[in-house]
Amino acid sequence: MLDADDVRRIALSLPEAVEKERWRHPTFDVAGRMFLTIPDDQTSFAVRCPKLERDELIAAEPAKFWVPPHEAPSAWVRARLAELEDTDELYDIVLDSWRQAAPGHLTAPDRP
Image (cartoon, rainbow, N blue to C red; front, top):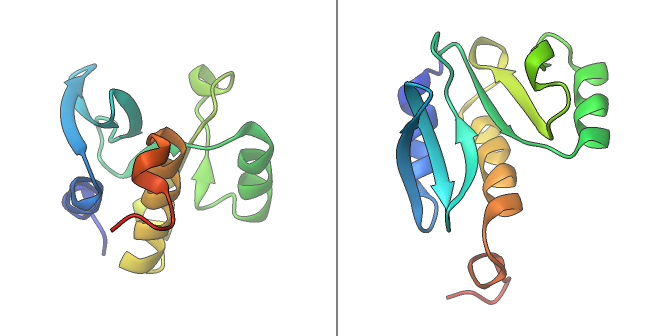
């Protein structure tokens, strides 16, 4: 089963990702923009997600994706670690969030 250490390892494997503590739990930034956070219970993680896509994700897989009421106005979604299929799925979710926060020179397709 995937855990918070898997999330941390993948997040930090991405270019220029750094870990910071906010709200007494780990968060991950690229170029000064947060792209991931691991809430206190460490059974889920939150990533950037445009609201329209977020609504579609939650509708399609409500056991996997959710938004706590206090985060409803934001463009973030949480994913339950126990519901993810494997490390590849976790990587894809984290990478998508990182791409939304990273500057263009890091995400360019011809990047060495």
